[in-house]
Length: 260
Length: 260
Image (cartoon, rainbow over all chains, first blue to last red; front, side):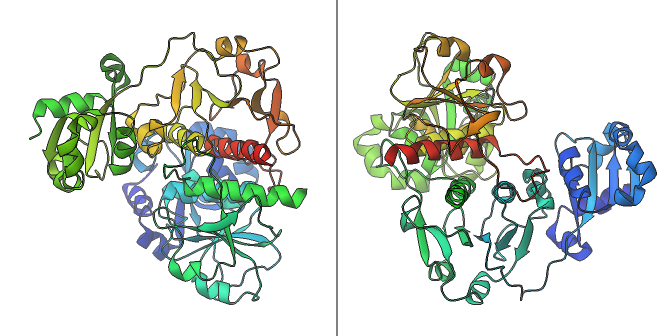
């Protein structure tokens, strides 16, 4: 039985203010919820009988690995609490993982991504999914970047949010704590062709805001400027790549070189 | 002055039935409308004073290159006719370009994309934008693929719809008209690593449906199976790439080889 109050409490988690206050976020659908449950139990799990039946054994034998609170609902109730146009069997509330305070440092021997003001939740979610695919464990976000625990972002990650650590931090301060010659990659119009530039198997790849690209403060800190070449037939046009697409093309090339 | 009837006629173009009947589609925003105007005049153009002032000279000297009908509106009127949550100064109705009937053949010496049942308008729009970036002029779509002239697709192309030709056709029939050894690329789980497979500078790259991948009929016609390698840290997970991201990574590698 889904109480009115529970619906209200969950729906408030659409707002960042409430997510931050409660330290909680919402995930929906068997894939995303399933991936998150592998990392730890949900605070609240709301599911249809179909989903509950598929998970009957684990709910009976190890309920503590699933959720502190399990609420069975029908489709109509799920529709009432869901953030999706087409709710998908299950939704759950999870704790936002605690990350260290602003003084975190970047592991220097791995490849990481930094996001300097990505605004669109779909882009952020897609970039988290790309990071997962390319084995990138950490994404460092400027405070202006969209919130990774926004329900739209969580959905767009397709479950990758369970495996990628997203840290909000002061990017220039983070970079300044790195060794002086640490490779800081950024895509810039005056960069070198991605396919001709030397790429290290570790480093920080910074992607900028959808409209404005990298902020001036970050631009100054990039020491390996990259440029993704266009093969457009009519180069008079200012064709552009979406930032998530540019992230994928860049990460693919880093990983291809590493394997070669 | 924007009449009620005009609002109604334009808003009906959200539906494929009406777009097909009228042979018309809607585009919005200075970038998308601007790119389309370079290819030919609009049937109807609805714009705020700000946009009209910026284009005053061309509207005075060569009105025939802009639109048969120009309607000045204020923000409130634009909001009423727009499909966007945040309308952007201008919207226009264009003729859907005529493409040859079902008997069209594929230019054999170029690289082309085929889409086998892409459902999401955002994915389709992004793929059209990717094609533009990578100099791919033609996209062949199965009849089940989303409609390229859906307003959401048109927006997601960011203007690339003006430069990429989208043809709806029977894909198996199209492929069967090609020379027998013509390279038909498809991404499949049992494919060869994209980075190890020989890639020709021409051919047809087929991308499948978001949930089901390539249809069985198409799978049989693929003669160069590709597989995009994952570098995920925990390969037990069924991480996946969004189809637009997979298209970009694939096209990037084709073009990189071609230049090398």
